[in-house]
Amino acid sequence: MKLVLASNNAKKLAELRALLAGLPLDIVAQGSLGIAEAEEPHHSFVENALAKARHAARASGCAAIADDSGLCVGALGGAPGVISAHYAGEVALIDGEDREARRRRQDAANNAALLAALRRCRRRPTAAATSSAPWWPSAMPTTPSRWWPWAAGRARCWTARAAARASATTR
Image 1 (tube, rainbow, N blue to C red):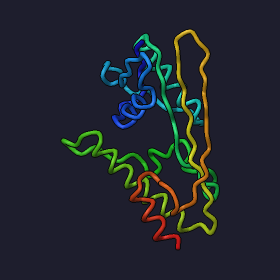
Image 2: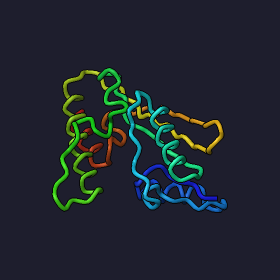
Image 3: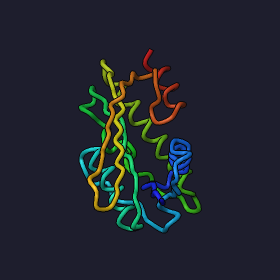
Image 4: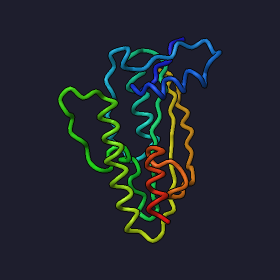
């Protein structure tokens, strides 16, 4: 059975293949089928994960799985939340730049914006939220969600390097 990952993230694809190794699945990224990324207009991780999975399933005619995740900082009123990937605003594409290079620049801008906001806060309890949404056409979705406690400077921000910077600025 073909399972479409509603993402073009090579690392997610490798992780999903490793997780489901041994099952009779041909797991492919949506981009390999010419499927564009879905919009994420919703106000919850679950709704965005479902939108992505439904989009990939409809476009491919196959089962699909998607996720959506981000950081929710209580001291920042839950921000960045569902806009974690673009917390600092969308970075402009540079001519000739590939997708991963742009994503690294976006992550760096997001890290800087989050750390600047955290420096203005006295209390920094945070959580990382994630939702995944497998979608089989004509079936009800299952949407497991998880909140992971996160302490600034003691866990990953968007990258391990950002966590090191957060640790240095919060002590």
